Length: 371
Ligand code: G6P
Image (tube, rainbow, N blue to C red; front, side, top):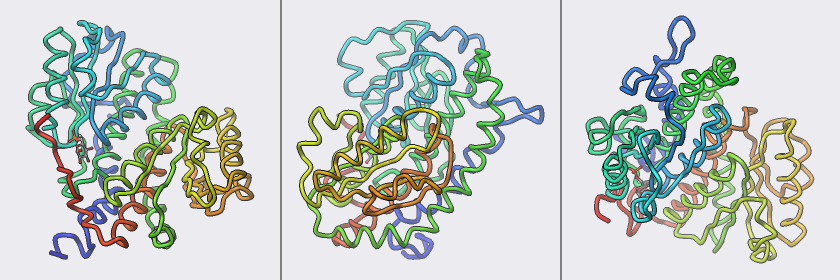
């Protein structure tokens, strides 16, 4: 009923709008009065974490994209090598793991068959397994050595939204915690990054206040057959997740690419009026922003209709954006928390306009408990 959906038409839309709360809840109680990061329920001793020399993140679907973002954050903040792998690939390829490997299994439901099997495989080879999960007492945390619970609350829409954002938060917390335990140079910046994280619910709220612009854009695309998504760095998994949402809900051909790969193939797909959604990194001292800008110019020169997500105040993008969606200014590694939100709204609205059942997309299940 509408009441269960808080007046929204779909659970998914309700869950998108719950994201500021979900992110805030996932941050509660993570810092001691003395400013130390704590992950109480984790059950992995600091010595065990200090011994970890390799991390392998395993997951499926949207959770896999959260894992890709986690790789950027964990490697940058902790200098620990991270691999990210689809659970279904990991378990059948004889991966190199031992007692100093930490497996991080990300699963909203805690019941995905491939992820569960991958955990069993890893534990049989003495690796430690940490689950990041939204469902208390589900199979994946039960079969893991340790767990960080996300606090999204029940997620009913088949396409994951608040589950994804809270997984990102848990991944950032894990990364910072490892930095603290290992004493990397980013250990000193934990406070600063935590403050940025604590500001994220407000920033997500700002993006949601601009939903009407995204809805209008979605309505304009009711006749579209194909959409490309470009991103780089932490924006690359956002592009992949944005494309996944469109496939899942609007049944459109949608593909995400790393912007740096354009010349290696994707640019051949560009033709007049092809919508290309571009996740523009924050303006910074690195080269990311400039490189993204030239990718946008290239697709636009070939006729693409560029829809750019760029931070407030970034005027350099204006000449190359056919449509500009503004994002709050946040650090590059945290940008996925705000950048994915317009893409969720876009997919939800476009599917609605096309008359699809957003909460129960055809052929999909909330939790894939068989192989
Ligand atoms: C299904 C759902 C996706 C989800 C994926 C992984 O495909 O439709 O939304 O991302 O499973 O689920 P998990 O519960 O393991 O995160």
